[in-house]
Image 1 (cartoon, rainbow, N blue to C red):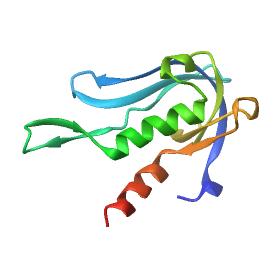
Image 2: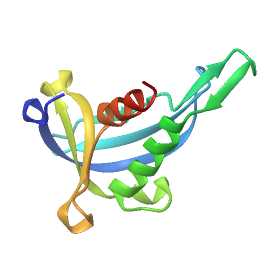
Image 3: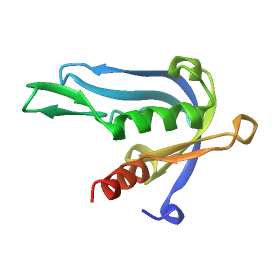
Image 4: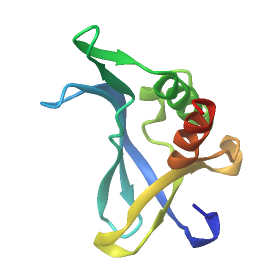
Length: 129
């Protein structure tokens, strides 16, 4: 995905967590943000694990571990809960209620790091070839 197609929106993190998500029981991260316009959105909610038929349960993946590390580095925190209250950019496509988040970026004062979620997955798919 080309970054040139993405737009960024300023947002504040209301809540950030990593854990087993609701009824689906998969490991994921979730970042709830509030935008300048007054709207709110939950981003992430991407499976960081996979189901193993051999183990008959969900198991961790290198992709999931790398995504968590990159999230923490991008947000410049040691624990994802420390991100609450931070102002960040959300990169995505569309506008209004059809805005589809594709990544995050910290402000320059917090390091200015940018993380596009699909790029992490792409890197791991290339490693598996």
